[in-house]
Structures are given as structure tokens and as C-alpha cells.
Image 1 (cartoon, one colour):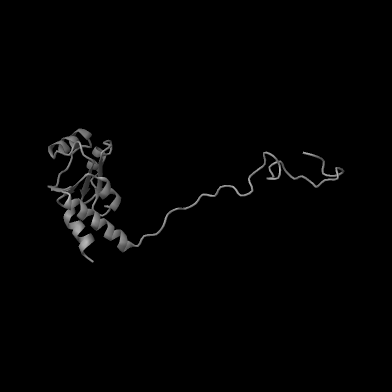
Image 2: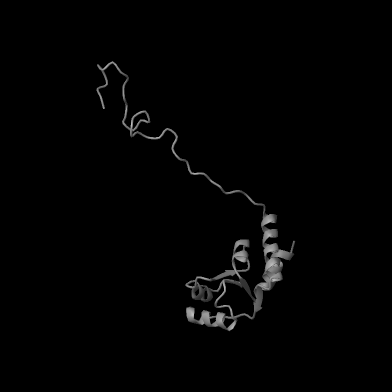
Length: 147
């Protein structure tokens, strides 16, 4: 910098001033929020239409309730192999949260487990096949057809 008095020029406060070479930016970048609001009824309708799209494409199957005693991936993969779904991107919809099934499936890339109350449009469209456990169907009926 330079002296504050005696040079004949204006006082220079800081090298970080945008007037100096290597100084700061005048209007630096500001993070922008790109999110926007969707109405609840529109989200509801989108999920319904995604489910009907999957039903028309024969991408939905309903199986009996099953449980896994210990959280092991091997047991979950055997169930998926028996259903001929081991090579497809699969979404399994449970009636309520089952920790053993969730822990058994979370290590597999092409599988996702969710509950009927947490089902969303992105997960429905992202999966090739959707497997509804028998107990999750009444929960879905109450969620979508109650209105």
C-alpha cells in the first residue's frame, strides 16, 4: 500500500478493494434457489398417473407378505431371483417400515425399498418394475382413493 497522507492521491483502504488489481469482485456469485412449489393435488395426480402408466406397461406385481429374519442381502437376493426380478431396477413397496428388509436391500444398486405412505412419483417412474407387498395395497387405496 501507500502512505495515507502526503502523496496527493486518495486514501487507499485495502488491497482487497475491487479497484485494485487482484482485489475482490464487486458483485460476487450468489447461490440461487431453483426450486418451485407444486400443489399437493398436482403431486397426488402425478403419482396416480405414474402408477397407471406402470400398470398399463405390466410393470406392477403384487406378492404375499414376506419377512426376513436377519438383515442379510443373500436372503433378499434369493427372493428377487424367485420373482425373476434380479436383473431389473425394482421398487418394493411395503405396508409399514421393516428394518430387516430395508437393511438387506440397501447394498444393492438396482433395488429400492419404500413404504406405501412414502411412495413418490420419481421412484415410481425410475423403477422398471414395482412390487407391492399385499399389505401395502389397502394403504395405497386409502391414500389415493379416499378423496
